[in-house]
Length: 303
Length: 285
Image (tube, rainbow over all chains, first blue to last red; front, side, top):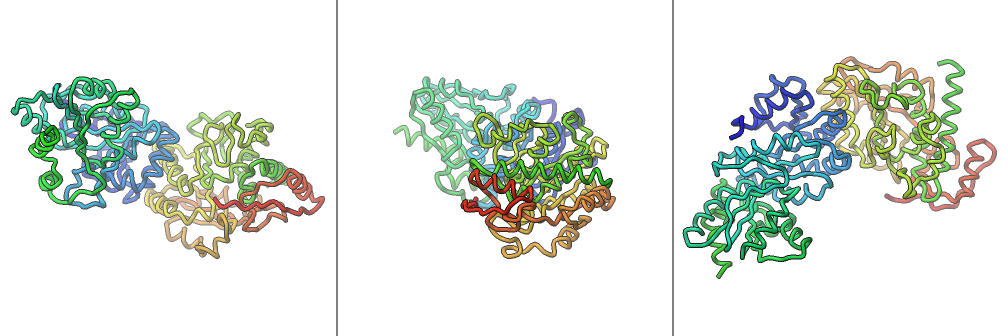
């Protein structure tokens, strides 16, 4: 377990221990609402101005600060994309992007709030690092190293309760190997770890040897782990709440091609479509991402 | 301002204009846009701002950010005149053996931040100003924007935030040369009454002749204009200032002259002859 039990406790401890940290938000206080009186002038809410927040964060970072910026993902990195690319990216500043409700976590908001091209967009920026924790415990293990690094970083925040119970210490660029299997290996990131854990149980109960990788760090990505499962498993399955283009499926394809190898890879992703808005449980069912449905889709593919 | 100081500034600005003209060939540069703010940049670097070749690492110094960016030949010319940069380096403009191109490159000492995408540096300047405040320092941040640049909503978004935080250590200077890339500002998206707009966004404003060193001195030494507001100086300027054959013309923004035209323009600058320009100089970007 992490020393802290919530994101807010971790960020409070981090900022109080080191004056370089500035907590910023474009009026999205979901995970930092108790911080204004604690951090004083080092808590900066710019109002609903994502571009100004990112530009301002760049100016602060230029002076040696480490700003941690909060907003709903689509606004943080799409509205302000050119500021992230041009100010943070070109100057390679240690601005940390804490992105709220990415992927399926925007549940009932509708397509305006669906950040399902975030991994694709962020990983194209030279020097930008990209991280997707699978639950609250995973996130709290990952963030200290991410925030302490000198690189710009994008993090899909995920405060959902621990779904695994046995997360290992985090290292940038290293995937968490949850199980290994000769028949199928599922590669996933973010909140879908919960459903893939269920899918693995179902498939194992049917006698299959099933592996599962929690990718954690999508850039840099764990190439060795990918090559290993490609060599040792008959089928790879990528499971992601992201467009098919530019996410984990694309990353796997790039890694395999770069290493002049190939594999049977089945992608479960959003192919040229936004997802149907609704409560998260409804979204998962409608889009075919519950544990049962993931297992069924894998079995159908294998036939 | 003493007469000798005034003469020093005039002489320096004259030299900077020579550098700008010399960079306006072999691929060219944003000649008109650089000439309009040459006097402003020369004034700021000739004693007003606490920025020197030797204090660039000092966190207590002042900061100047070029937000419109394509006016960087005026800044490089000023660096040469102040001895921060080798004069011969300007000949490397656009060459792969150096790093001087159409927009500011922050790898060159003295350039605070890269720019070229309009509407970015007011917010970056706000971040630097906030850091100065957090450190308890009273050093200044000056951001030069174009007037066409004010079309960008991000400029106004940042002013909104800067005035909410009462950033009296942030000054926006508008190089009001009345043109954007291809047309007059007032014929496309009119900006006037510009001072009223800045005031409505919570700024304290002065409007001056941006080519008059006495007026620049009077305005800048009065900063901040208000104890609890960001300051804005609208510097009325002339695009292409100093060269009658370039001045106030829509088609003299980006110029790539033939060498003989540059030679003729230099004579025009010296007051010796007029220039007939035949190069196709407008490049829509």
